[in-house]
Length: 112
Length: 112
Image 1 (cartoon, each protein chain N blue to C red):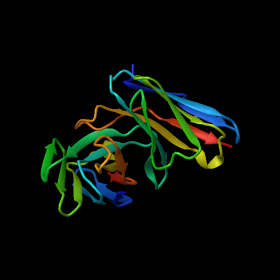
Image 2 (spheres, rainbow over the protein chains, first blue to last red):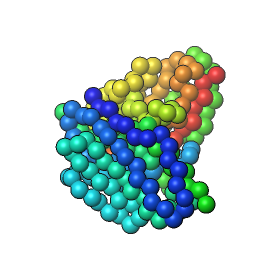
Image 3 (cartoon, each protein chain N blue to C red):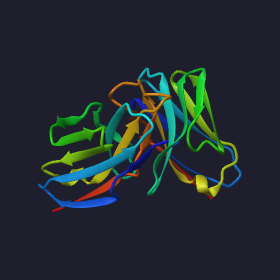
Image 4 (spheres, rainbow over the protein chains, first blue to last red):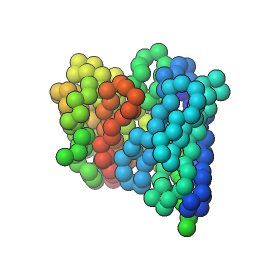
């Protein structure tokens, strides 16, 4: 099985930087994904990491350390529209690459 | 048109009723999934299918059944709905690659 932990809520000011941590314990690992979900809407793909290191996509970056079972999502130059829940998801194990286990999500609140 | 379409978007049903949630996709993906989302619990996998002849239980399949009518269609049924099945249900598809899931818009189900 897999356990995925991330903080429940974080608050930050518009224009600031926020780092959302995710730790996981898995019996196998193929990749870690981050999704953004606005209230009442479907999650949308943000980034994924397969190898250790930092992946940068515009204002969003994601980091992975497989040996530590740790990832973070970095949101820079926060905008009000970034207020959303951010889901960490891990895929792996002996059965499939395509099946994900999700964390409960981190609600990010951006204040003016 | 959306890549992954779920119907209905909202549904209120009575305890003991049978209800079907439908999902269709135009992505051409072989892999389809049903998740439910509850506050504080994140997304939990109900059933998944890697092709038309392949159906697998997820972590919370009790009380649910599925049908994969075609590559593009994957339906979830609640045989006898109960109030603790009140949740937001998402269908998702995947090609098993590095872009993760494409989610439908969700079905908000309330069992009274």
